[in-house]
Structures are given as structure tokens and as C-alpha cells.
Image (cartoon, rainbow over the protein chains, first blue to last red):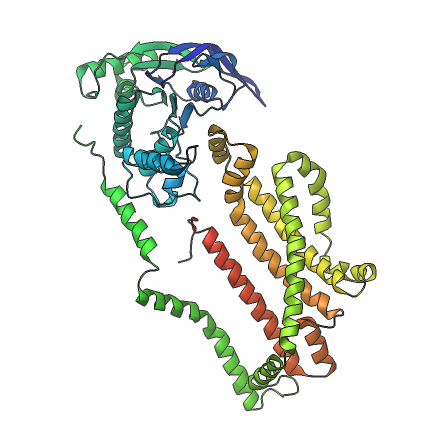
Length: 254
Length: 286
């Protein structure tokens, strides 16, 4: 079910009015089926650009991106995406939003949508329109919608970034539970270092100008992870160090 | 880790709000209140009619300038009974409907095409925008010479009036569709017809409804002009007839009928609108 991803020498240059900007350069990364990898870095490091390229939403990249051994040339139902905003269709209720990308019909469809809504903990809200949902609930619905076609890869573009701290923690937990149960290959783009360590089996550290991979760190901690532990803090220091933020003052500020 | 429980107070509050909304139409008491609130819009017209009546009976208004409301009502009742009223209303509403469907339909089609295709926008939009600056009522004499005095010039004038509101609002509605939602459609690999049906049309629908309501209003106006210029039936003809026989009661009755029919149709479109756009979360006024 889960599929692997390979990126070889991936680059992306944007032509702007003030000349060209190199958003991505020399990106090499292989993600095994079932693996959860965090991409972390400051804004402008190209992490979202890389994710959009893997999704097939931006096909102007150079180099090679393979999904399940096939070159990525456009969006595909085997690659599900969750954006920073829920992007629910305001004219559809929760039930129809979750079923938006589902090709199945009849009882298979009904069963699948019901199952997904209960998986993300939104049972009872099937008829609610998006403006009646809180930010966290809407993002849960977006997760369910992305899971509906049973994608082999989940691409998450700062999915918890717009939520308040408490809702974010709950959603990170919910997502972790789902991932542990399904083991779908996933790339999580984030600027939140703790989130990257908490969820990822590996953390890919990216730096800007030009956007490239600086380091890949294996997170050797069992799930669920204890954010207060000494080893968690050590990983955090290590990653902060990659951004030249390792000196005490800056580390505390973050 | 204990903080990370799943259900939340905030979520529960939202659910409570959602259920009250859906229950609102429920109880009989509330329904009666809604009816009462709906009728409150008629208070002002009723007061105006009362003032008109009082001014008439006290002699402030001369009956040869404006007959009392009772006379107007009696006249309307008479022509209802002898079938004249129905004939005129039917003629007017038919012209209105045919003209609106033809002109508005064309506006909807062209507006959609120009909205969806930048090529079509380049070729067509400048011309349409230029034509729009021509006051369509100024076309009336020309239409009579070209199309005669029968139904054709009237329906064309109504159609012209309905065309532009539909064209402009459909075009704008499509161009205002959130690019992010289009992207979601791409992620789920919608074909072009599916994208149109499942994303673009529902997203553009509020603007199209605005165009429909505005277009119906302008078309109704065009109808009055068309019928005043020469017709043998229709509400506009009723006004002309009233003037020729100096029957102020008929003229006033005709004006009232114009506004009544317009209001009824607008109410009907509003009902359709709230049926199709109930998902909207817009400011309802304080």
C-alpha cells in the first residue's frame, strides 16, 4: 500500500521580476515505504516547494522525482495532500467534503466516509458546513479527505501551523495515532522543530538561499515521544545548531 | 501528555451552535414569530395607503389627480373579474420571462466562456464592455424600425437589459473562485467538466444569483418602456390606455401591479437563493 519516494538532484528556480531565485538546489532524498520524514527549516528554504513538486502541483522542477518508481508529472490520487489551511469546500457539508476525492459509490462509499469521520473524531458533525467548524475540526476533516482515496503517500504542508498551541498538540497526537495504525509513507513540512522531532522518524534539515538539504538526522526515540526528555532536548539542540542558533540566548528564544 | 485529550470544550461549543441553527425552523411558536417578522415589512406600505385614504376623504387630494385607494381597488377587482387583468399580466410576464431567459441565458453563457478562457476574454470582453456603455433603452426606436411593432422588439429590449448583469456577474464570479480550491480539485484529478461542476459552478453561484436578481429588475424596467412604446396588451399598455381615457385609477392600478409582480418574482428568486446558498456564512445585519 505505502509507496517509496526518490528525489535525485532536484532543483527549482523561480523567474521573478527582480531576476531568478533558486528555491531548491541539489536535493537528494530517498524515503522508504511506510516512513515518516519531517522537513524542517526557516521560510524560504524550499521545503514547501519540494513538497509541491512531489505532489505534482509544481512540475517545473529539474532533476528526478520518483513515486513508486514512476516519474512525477502531475497530481495523482496515490499522493494525498494536506495544506496549511483546511481548504474545505464551503458549499459541502463535512460528509461530502470528506468524500470529495472518493471514487467509490454506494455502500462502500458510505462505509468509508463514516469510518474516516470517526477516525478523525468528528462523528456527529457530518452535516456541519465548514464555517460551523473550529479550525482544528476543519483540519481534521481535511485529514480525513486526504485519507479517503487510501493514498500511498501523505504530503503535509505545515498542516498544524495555523492552529493554536493546544489544538496543534491534539492534532499532532491524532495524526500520530493514525500514522502508527496505517504506516502510510508521509512527508511533514514544518517550521516547528519540536513537531519535526516529535513526529518524524528522520528529520531533514533544510537551509535557505539556495534551498538545500543541510543534514538528515535519524530520531531514535520510541513513539509516543516525551517532549520533556533529555534525549528529545538533545535532538532539539542538535537541529538548532544547524541553523546557527545554537548559542544559549537564541535557543531559549525559540 | 495528559493535556492531549481528544474531545474539547471548544469543539462541543461549536456543535451546540450548529444544532441550534438547524433546529431554528422547528417549533410552531418560532414559526409564528418568523411569519410576524416577515409581515413587519408591510407596516410602512399600509401606513402610506392609510395616509393616502385619509388625504382623499378629507379632500386634500383631488380625485381627478389621484383617486382614493378604494376606487383603485374596485377598479382592479373589476378588471380581475372580467379577465382583462389576467390578459395584461400574462402578456407582460411572458415577454419578461422569454426576454430574460434568452438575453440572460446568453449573458450567462458568454460570461462563463469569457470567465473560463483567457482567449475568449481577449476576443470578446472589450467589445461587450463597449456595448455596455450604450444605454440599452436608446436602442428602442432602432429595434422598432428593424423588428416591427410586434413581440420581437419588446423581447429583444428585455433581453438586452438582462444580458449585461448576467454577463458581468458570471464573469466576475468565475474569476473570483479561490485558486486554492481549484488546486484541491487538481489534487483529486478532476477532469475539466468535473472541475466546472464540482468546484467552479458552486463557487460562482452567489455572484450568478446577484446577476439574476439584478437582471430581472432591469429587464422589468425595459419591459415597461417597451410596452409604453406600442403594444396591444400588457401592463404597459394598460398605462397607455389609462392615460388616453384619463382613467387615473387604471394608471395607478397598473403601477401597483408592476410593483406587485416584480416583488413576487424577486421573492421567488430569493427563496431559490437561500435554498441553493444556505451554506454561506455572511453577515445577516445587526
